[in-house]
Image 1: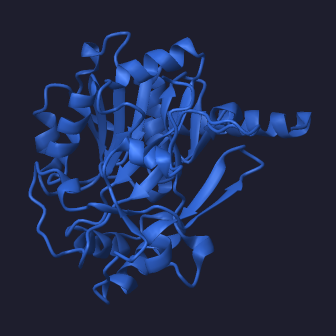
Image 2: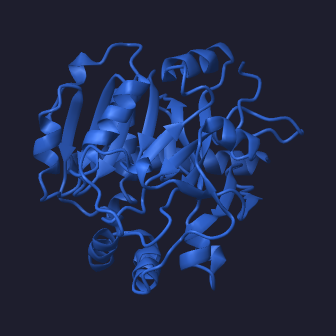
Length: 336
């Protein structure tokens, strides 16, 4: 990369950091327990709205994984989400009624909170329907992974978003708070992915899976991106650019090996397709607070009117992380 492009990226990173500082005024502290955060703690950062039904299992999953603290931004919930989170002993809660769209879809808020509370910490930036899977996650806590990354001088860890879905209509089973969503969402696409490199930021851009074939079959280029870098040893000089799809400095996006080897990577099991998906899609379509005037939710709304079954003859039933490695969807690399 030339000197001019490097300079432009440095200026862009500075602009996002300054924007996050300005946007901090939109956040009000509801329950600040950040004084509990110890220097070595692993922290989850999450922005959400009206997700009280998902929270019990989300918190249980990450507590059992070894996460020490959670920092949430509640963007105008009216279903009890804020009250539920405020009563959790390891949660710090901030709220805002400001525009999700004008905060760059929550990125500005999260960049500020990462700068203030994530500096020096391994930080997981997640949506409430994303469940981190990494090599040996069935036998090793997340701290084993972050300790190995520290020892290897690795600052960021990449994942593929793996959309999970049921066999049969999406709303065929009612999801109850606290239940494991993957007792119902057994299936995923083992192939059907396209990959290209973003030369400006250095990250891979991955699309495909059930959302592409079911909701964007006629416009595959508009299908959601499935590449994320959710786990970062954060520094206050860093900045996410677009969700957790890419960040600056550019080197943090190089979570793959260009020379024929394999870097350690994981997956985010995506529990989007519960029975709550239909009502959530309608709500977000009306709010128009998502990317590109909510074109993604327009596609969902149109597709859901046909009561789709995402299962197909190429669907694979989920077993464990080793299966995902065999299929080439993640890798343990040289972590043994």
